Length: 313
Image 1 (spheres, rainbow, N blue to C red):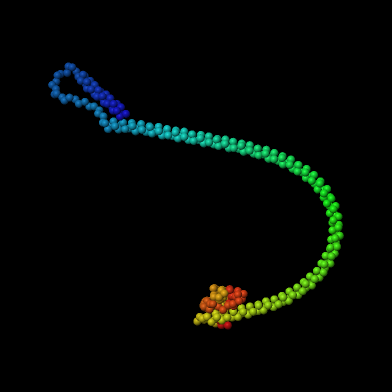
Image 2: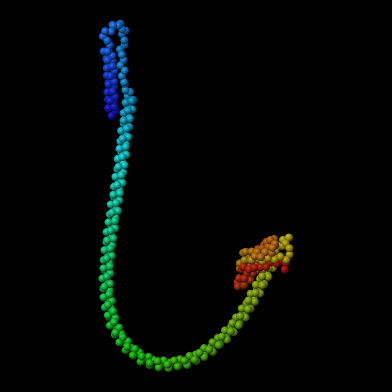
């Protein structure tokens, strides 16, 4: 392509050169023949001005043509790629449509098969139901026949049973009379035994109530003694703050374990004087372990109990 461009510009160069030569020749022949012969100074030969093409211009022009052709090729390739992409898209759509149609056909085929299986199942069920009804009919006939036989047997059995029942009733009436007699005797014996039982139960309950009262008295006494001992030990371990007035009191919630060790101390009713309340709490903790009853049942009362602390009383 570059060679073709250079050939084109070379032809232009020849045409320009020919045009210049023709103009010079025209001027030469147009001079008048009768013009006086003049002595002329010998002139230097005329320099023919010709258009010389720069190789860089040719190269640039060729490069421009090359770039133009390259752009055309790129445009053609882009258009070709777009058409190819469109064809691929159409092909994909066609394949998807074929796939969907195939799937639908398979679903229809499967549905038809299922419907055929359902019809076959219904047909089999109808046949089984017919067979079952025939069997039920035969069974019903056999049952009716058997019921007739059973009815006859039952009537005979009832007749025999009625005779036996009358005989048994006579025997039963005699037995009832004897049973009533024995029942009356047993009732009298049971009544006497119940009366004796109630008497003994009353005696036992009286003794039990006395024992419970005694136990309660002992428990109350033990509780009172233990409470007094606990108050005494706490008071012995109490140090009166210098600015606390006399005759103050507060209520303390004390938690103990079986050994008498103090687990918790809470002021539930304040004396109104924080110094006195704090000193009472310290006295309880300092007095630990507290003297508690050895009896587990009585100690339950001291596992968590309220104590009124009034050291001046």
